[in-house]
Amino acid sequence: MKLRNVLPLLVVTVLVGCKAPAPKMTDDTLVTSQVNGVTLTHRYIVSTPTEFTPVNASYRALYAGSLMSTPDFGGKVLGQLENGKTYTVLGTVEHSWLAIAEEDKPELIGYVPPRALVKSELYAQTLKKDRPRVRRAGSKKTTCVNVDSNSKACQNADSGTWIIN
Image 1 (cartoon, helix red, strand yellow):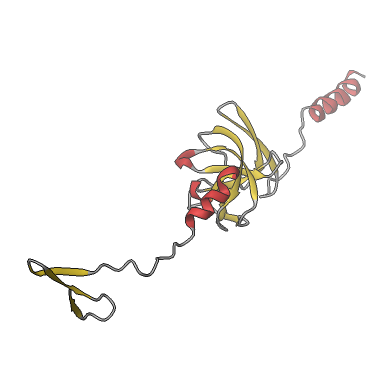
Image 2: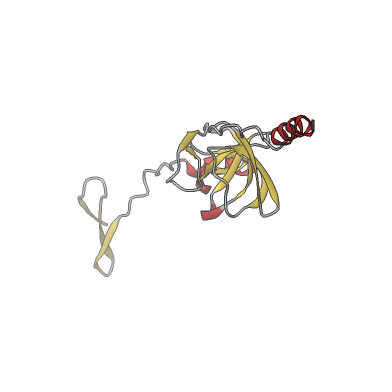
């Protein structure tokens, strides 16, 4: 009789101690990490930075740069920035790279080099400075020499001929 009571108790004890297997991690599985007191939510493929300084500011893309899984060029390319699109810079990480998120979303989507983005308020000014400047015609240097005390000769910059004044 005691054996009948002990056997179900043993089965219940064994089953209570079992845990369900952990779900398999895929590249798109969302995980959370804590770095320097800041909690980051990101996909499993995006590596957790070792250093993190919060920024939380709006930046715009200067060119269609690569969005990387690690804060260096050795990681996987996760996508491309859209030229001129606004992103939220969550913070700076090692090698001065920027950890970014989609605008108004808290999820870290990857890392970009610091030159790929510029603060939103400086975007128009940065583009204006980057335009090629047109050189003005007519600012050619003339060559003049004194011939004697009251006359001089100048070379015409267009034709190369000398004119005595």
